[in-house]
Length: 288
Image 1 (cartoon, rainbow, N blue to C red):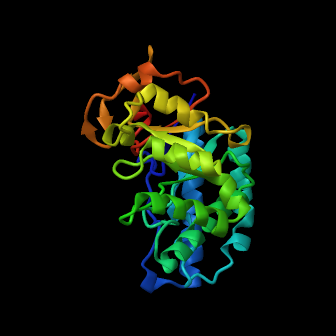
Image 2 (cartoon, helix red, strand yellow):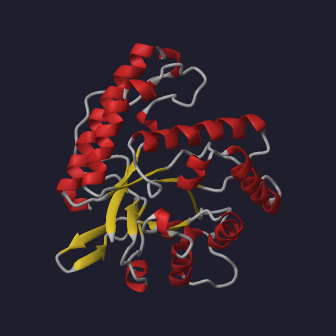
């Protein structure tokens, strides 16, 4: 099992902004911010290796406005060497990488412009991982999207747009995650059966929104793991914060900042060969 966390490490002080306002966009500003973001990412990766945190979700904001029409800079060429170097470090240290676009990425939207912008955003995320030279086990994690008054139709739209608009490179990296109110594990499994997309199990979302068939957390988790093929790498899962104690794994009993019982999931399922993402930024290595 590899344990990690998403995006932010508050142990590493940062004195430069990670983004800027669209109104302030210019080539020099973009290059400066991206350079600083890559410097900061490098520090985080070194910190993670030192603390045996070998699963990390890279921030979507690494290249601000990369998928926006305003961005005319060939940042891929400008920073190719830096991305290649980061990728070599990741591969040498066997760090598993993922990315998670924000909630505005909706490839099943009934609005054409939203679908187009979503495809551009997914292509940008894929470019980051491709520039690092990472294989298909580096994943882009998304929710299915909205229901738009007809959940069955919305699922079919997701599947159609997945096949129609996403490049093979994006498709090989995409994984879908059960959410907390619209699409549960069974919905994701149904889409997997029709498309082959791996399903990432989120235990917090599972507690919020379960299927009506009484599927246990253990069975739900195992069924999601079975959707991952050899080229996808070890299955990924999202779980609330945990601690590595002297006696092994123990729960800090928090889910996204709220104190709740959260240890049962870890006791009930086999975690060998699993990547576990902790949904919380860390303040120091005692928190992970």
